[in-house]
Amino acid sequence: MNRGKVYLVGAGPGDPKLITVQGMECIQEANIIAYDRLINKELLNYAKTDAKLIYCGKLPGKHALIQEEIHELLVEKALQGKIVTRLKGGDPCVFGRVGEEAEVLAENKIPFQIVPGVTSGIAVPAYAGIPVTHRDHASSFTIVTGHGRKEKGMDHLNWEAITKGSDTIAFYMGVGNLNHICKQLTQHGKDPTTPVAVIQWGTTKRQQTVTGNLVTIEELVNRSKITHPAIVLVGDVVQLREKIQWFQENVQPVLN
Image (cartoon, rainbow, N blue to C red; front, side):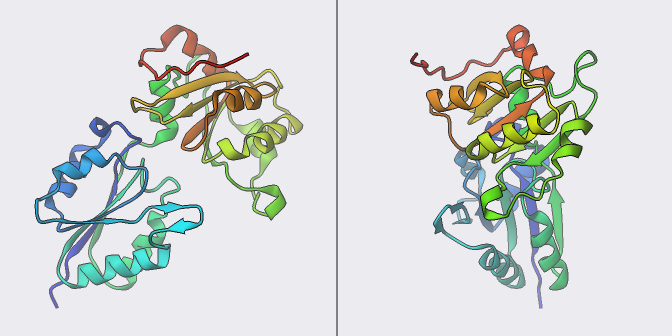
């Protein structure tokens, strides 16, 4: 049987120019491109004219393809001898479920390659003028999934370790859970005046940033109508935005 190959590719955080050279080559080589919701669709313009584009994005209550079906799709197309590029937002190894997909491919003896991408927890703050580390402000950085709901029994984070063990914390998928995040951080020892930035649609023309602290940020985000997709960044590095903000944002007025 002529097995194909699967590339598990990180497309970067939104700006199409932030995809890696190798990631772009995988798009250009593919017979099949299975892409997620948050990738920049401009990248699909670089696919071969006869490449088949398959949307694999998931919205709450409206799943185009559930994860098991994605596994079946990758295996099926590769066994047909196709070159498949699985295109994911950011870096595929950071909350991208690439480990699950790679396991399935390995079990089916299908050749695959993981192509790292620029992850949003670093790139999005950079576009907002916030480096995640700085000699005077932060020597450690933590990436955390932020959507675990306590009321649903889904919050499995070690909040004490996160709070006390890292200078800068980036929460992915956390804007809808902002109240819980801020409460947990303050209850476990973070100063309530610790700066916080929430950055929506980072690295794109739609980027919008709101800054405050652990006490004020939820109200500011609500007034600015910021929703998913957004990164929540906590730490003293946020104050550097005042000096080094460089990217022109889509500024929305906040009504008093």
